Image (cartoon, rainbow, N blue to C red; front, top):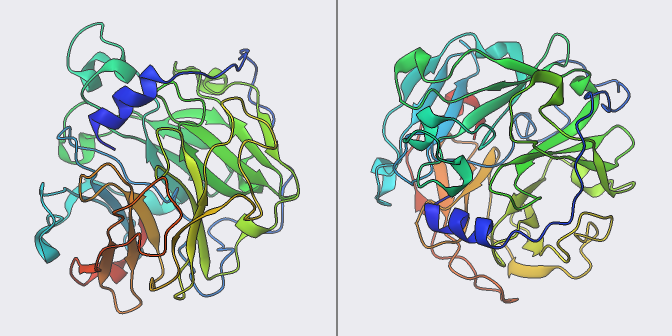
Length: 345
């Protein structure tokens, strides 16, 4: 996400949330899905990430973080600064080992630090640098943890030691990362075992179980985003500065999104059933693992999908705010051999 979009987000803070510091004990009841077990049928890796990519190198371009399914190594693929086929993202740089201990990995702006924003005392949300932190769920016990960005890309020292921010997260079906409170910092959005969706607001200070505020219910009994193996759901920026809730059929079906309908967080903030949805495209996208990021730099989140052949395809999004059927430019092949990864975010 580029700095202009974040500047607009900060200027548009309208949230009326009243956040209180509470012990993070609101995780959903446990469900039968064990550590590392995918909920999808046709896309076994599609629920292991947050479906969002982030700037990890400080150049205002979204980079890709990917985990090797065999070794557990974590690789950083830096955006080259232009869309140029297989050269769009550079070859992977090793930034972590042993990451197969996690069954979900996401990236976002969680922590304010002088190292990240580049000058002492600056507020991260008002800075021109937004180096993504990693948030991950440990498979063995469901602990959710944040790995703060060190401020520099330095191999396996790029991210600092993790801080545990909550327990019981293996009982969660889906986890997303999005700035739904519109304060410049990413929050956690989670679907529990009863298909209820909750927001855990980021309190902007890394204080273990007090990092996230009291959860807020934003939907009830939403079976759709639980997944059918052919559809992915993500928070995007297609309508405006506030996050949209997007649905993309990966088997060639439509892509549509529900804009944020109100600044406060309630069960009516987004449409979870397609009502009020705006059409981005009526089809043409195929693949498995998917993520969204403004790869082209035009201000709209684009769609990335790994094909079953291992090629990574970019579906550039050229339109926003309006219902239309031609919201995508021609697909761009970003190269092959991406099937070594079971997480791309």
